Structures are given as C-alpha cells and as structure tokens.
Length: 96
Image 1 (cartoon, rainbow, N blue to C red):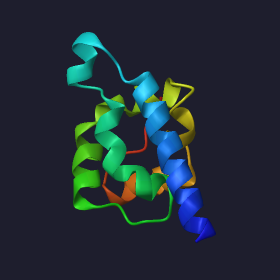
Image 2: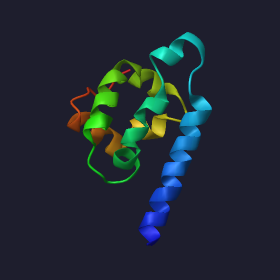
Image 3: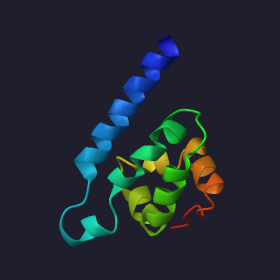
C-alpha cells in the first residue's frame, strides 16, 4: 500500500511539472510534454510502456532535446527508466 501511495504522489508531481512547463503558442502543436502522460507509469514507476505510450513517445521524439534542456523535465528524460522507455519504444535517446 505504501508503494501505491508513493506512485500516486509521484504521478501527481510529474503531471504538475508537465502542466507548468507545457509550451504555448505555435510550439504547442508539435512539442507538448502533456502528450507523454501515458508514459508516466513507465518512467516514474516500473511499468512496461504501453502501445499508447510508445506511440506518443514516437510522436514527441524530436522534442526530447527540448525536454532534456528543461530543468523540470530533464530528470525524467535522463532517468534510467526514461531511457528504458525510449529503448523499448525504439526512440533514440537524444544526444543533445
């Protein structure tokens, strides 16, 4: 039960960060970290990435450098789980 509570808190924190840094204007159509919320369980927890997660990850693959430079998102892009999700979804880990 403690692990479930920690996962819920982590997911809420992740979504709060994503909401704070969501781009506005023209960039919102292409780079939108909110599109990666289906990957939260895999990146923050230890869940396997879903088909929806991989689809979104592939759609956002060109944005990974931008996300990696954002201090609020960098920890997720650079995390071991973030890299595992990218690998599982066949998204190249950015070398920015």
